[in-house]
Image (tube, rainbow, N blue to C red; front, side, top):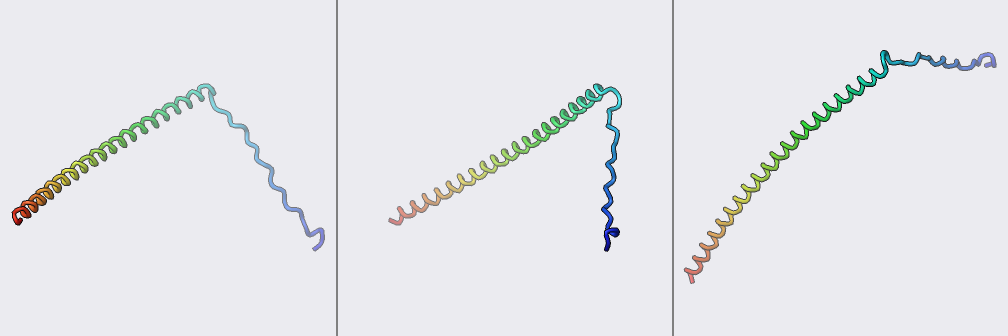
Length: 100
């Protein structure tokens, strides 16, 4: 290989220069339209958030009611069981007293 066989690598193509982008029409109107669009979007986001929060609160209230009902049922069951055990205990005591 001689020095003539080696060629320098090709240079990259020059970067493409595009014209700057300019808004069409009145820039103030464009800014105002964007602001109004953002305001509408933010209002819709807030409404959606309120709707989801309302639904979540309703679900939480329902869960709380279910928990309360479950606790009341459990309390009633335990009270009934306690009464049953007290009756059995008094029956055993009565039987022991009669045997003595």
